[in-house]
Length: 124
Image (cartoon, rainbow, N blue to C red; front, side, top):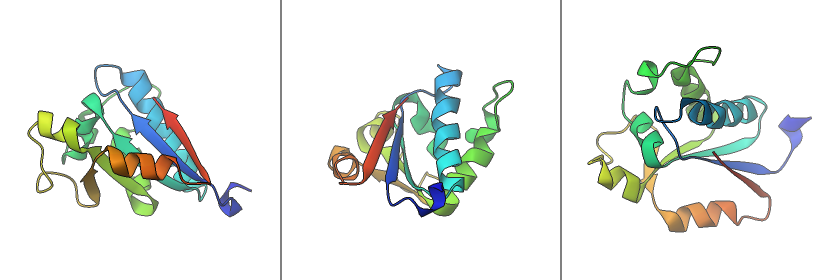
């Protein structure tokens, strides 16, 4: 039933290794929706911005959670992943540093995505 839904899901991850359960929840929900055919946009903000870099998701571990790298792969395969412009700049990350398929964009793009008529936004 989810695969035929016309709604989109925008998930903002605000935590990284500093709050691993919250981080994993954001990635899990986004990947589950993407696997079900929902149009997904995952935003990496705050400490989750580090996961835009190659190898960072592979180093994340949380017992009883799917590997973050696998979840990220599912999302990248069918949806979009965006690193916050300001968050990336504070961490000296630029577009040449990120995993292929990850874009860097700011608040205007986030607002545009979340205000779309069929969008549902979740913040973790």
